[in-house]
Length: 143
Image (cartoon, rainbow, N blue to C red; front, side):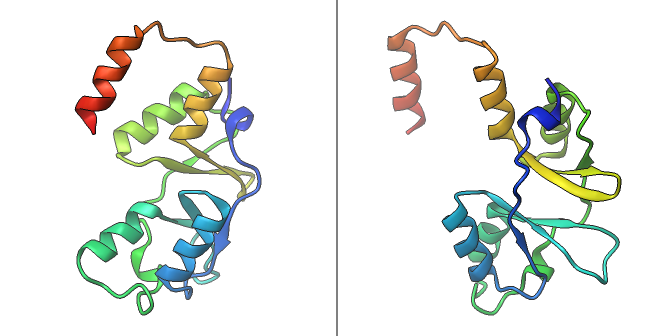
């Protein structure tokens, strides 16, 4: 399977001047973990994620004052629609992030997340034969 098979084609977009609260509210309403940020003054699309919002809150910043532009990922990695899901997953793991902006011909074509990759692999017939007791023990231990 390729990135195009699993990516979300409808992407939440916010502006660099939105507050972090605005971005968080929109991500919550859409039930997504990231938004593409379009800034005509920058070189290309960027991204703001739920982790960016949490990091800001964690250091005591005011989400009603902080602007998206000040919390963007500094080095955005883009995926191509024809990448394999394995390549996208490996890129996310190596980079320590959970979302990739998918660009095709210089335009945003979509967004793919780790959740999308796992969903595709699961829907594609992947299975896991973990005994029920082991599954329960793992979830209790991780709680």
